[in-house]
Image (cartoon, rainbow, N blue to C red; front, side, top):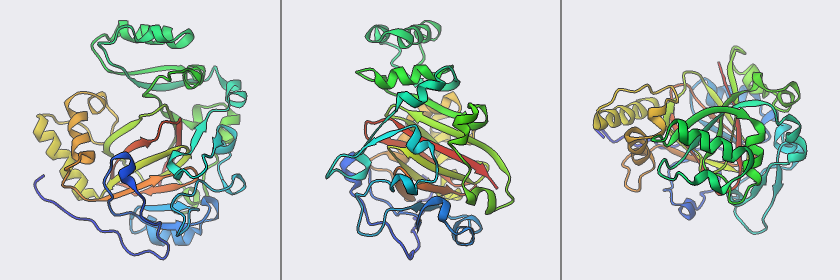
Length: 334
């Protein structure tokens, strides 16, 4: 890194207590400011003045001070129906909230099993017998990927939702299978209705929504360091994710330093294959998540029911937490 910049979080009226991130091997960094309350009940003017206009990340959560291990809010408080209709949350007593388990309720989502969705999968290209551990659709899909791209570890393809449902029920689970950036407008109408747009997305700015997507995966799932061209509201539906954020200048410096190190010149706004495998993926992961990384920014665990506002231009990287199926929804808007 050419310059080390420390970004300290401001004091907030409501602050989530420091959590023990060392349990899963990440450093404790500054946390973003918070708004305590249900997403749909958030005052639009408060959100606009604290986050949207000054372009500051903010966490919207029902977890209160003194309750670092609380799980998501009660279902009656959850403003996005998909969280309760798509997932059955099994709370583990005396475990921290990020270890609480979530599983897919096939009796509901199986009705939409023929819906075609975009997938990502990371496989060891040298493990040619991988598909033999599975049956049905999984075996056919894995064998096809290994035959078409025998030297690749990262694969992108379209397949029905039934593939994901089968993978979630199989033991051992097929790790690193990810429904990535599936547009809400392409889902069946009933599933779209389960993902209603939050009020702050519609009212904080001009009301323009550029895109809205779901993300569902079998851990570990990972999105490398990048920035979005528009403000982003990221809402967690099931399980938890850890997000690291860097202000625009520092994030740009980290990204281009990595590009210089590996001799590449990739895009910072598109989820390209070079970002997902090979030297760029490894270098970005080490720069952002490495044990001895010199960069300081913000870090937050987004639990079920939480929403994180990521301003335009802020760089971020996302990792799943725990071993349970995770799911998120996001809106890019202005």
